[in-house]
Amino acid sequence: MSKKQASLPLIAIVGRPNVGKSTLFNHLTGSRRAIVGDEPGITRDRLYGEVEWLGHAFRIVDTGGIVPEDKDFIPSEIFRQAKVAFEEAVAIVMVVDARTEIAGPDRELARLLARTGKPLFLAVNKMDSDKQDSLLGEFHSLGIRNLFPISAEHGRGIDDLLDAILKVLPASAKAITEVTKDTEESTEETPDEGHEIRVAIIGHPNVGKSTLLNQLTGKERAIVSPIAGTTRDSIDELIQYKGRKIRFVDTAGIRRKGKTRLMAEKLSVVMARKNIEDADIVLFMVDATEGASGLDANIAGYAHESGRSVIILVNKWDLVASGEKRAISQSRTSRIQDAKRPQDRALYEERLRYGLKFLSYAPVLFLSAHTGKGTEKILPLIEDVAAERRKRITTGEMNRFLKTVDFERASVPVSKRVRILYMTQAGVAPPTFVLFTDRAVKLHFSYQRFLENQIRAAFGFIGSPIWIKNRARD
Image 1 (cartoon, one colour):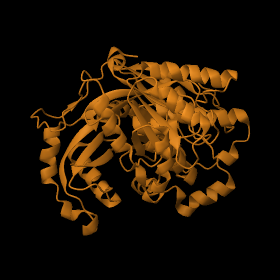
Image 2 (cartoon, one colour):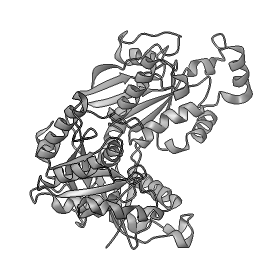
Image 3 (tube, helix red, strand yellow):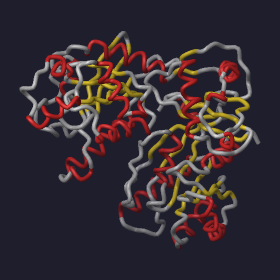
Image 4 (spheres, rainbow, N blue to C red):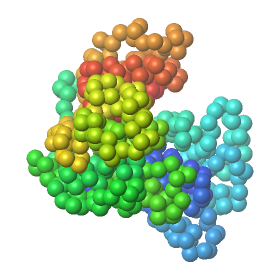
């Protein structure tokens, strides 16, 4: 942990098993570092992350599910780890499940937390709509005054919880950016000298990930085999490029859940997803002889949703360009001849992007990992995308840009439109913008997409998703 991180105030997330603590942690940190599942007890150790909200930064810690009176070794160790977390914390968020009745352990935990004397917030999770507000009544009996209905999965109510947390942070907490300050500084990239760029190579089994890793590192680091699923563990290799460290991680091929029968393969899928979360940039590989399938879109979705920057690599393009079919089965050959692998790159990319519409910001490279052709473009592009990912636009420049946008061009019903009073970039990696609007409504999808396109046209952010949040001015 860096000195800067250690100096940030800490907020602890606690609660019984399976109430949604890890989902809330992932939402706040913009990552999927915490594994989420229906099985209670998945999280055991403490997991730390950093949050930026309205110019302030703080750390949060996700703890294992607490059952105070459980004397079994694992639950008691979880309890011990959680106690360490909320002793370190300046405030505590207790998470409960709105869809289950309050149980004895909930009341015991609430009493235990109250005795710490620290600011306490009750997040009533899984409140996905206003229709469920009637469920809140009984949770007042826990005696926690600061109660917030939220949906950690969908982001509902999280803004109000964060606003309340900011009010209890120490006065010494460092403000990262002043949202109302109209600065005249020019666009700049956040200094990240010494920052190691972590790059995860993902794709379905046998797409050529291990071959690419060997090509990029100049080593036979990964076992390469025509048998799908050869790689189970994640393999990483560190290289130096123009004085920067780049760590490549070759992940196991991600399959649909129904295709992963062996426990080792299931675990490799979990670890592959975790490696995506730990990465700065994802190299998403597509087999040129097959095109992008629904499974490919599924895999890419993991990277996109977690805010990773993405570069699309169309591998085995040499087979397409040469018309080589010897290594392709007859059934696949017929699909290829059915215009699934056109030789025109522009047409191929158009069809690829149609199937991966949510990755419209991701650059595309055509290459052959086997021969090395085209792979020389990967490292310079990684360097560019890493810089764009951490680029910060000043509030003054953002608001000057805002005055130039013609929102009448947005294909949004008049009733769904809001007036944007001002906006600021609240975070980087991925670039995150907060809009302050005249009323508290969720931005229409088309409105948000239009604004994102305008931001990209003005400032770039190639390869990186852009997150946009809106807040009512009051």
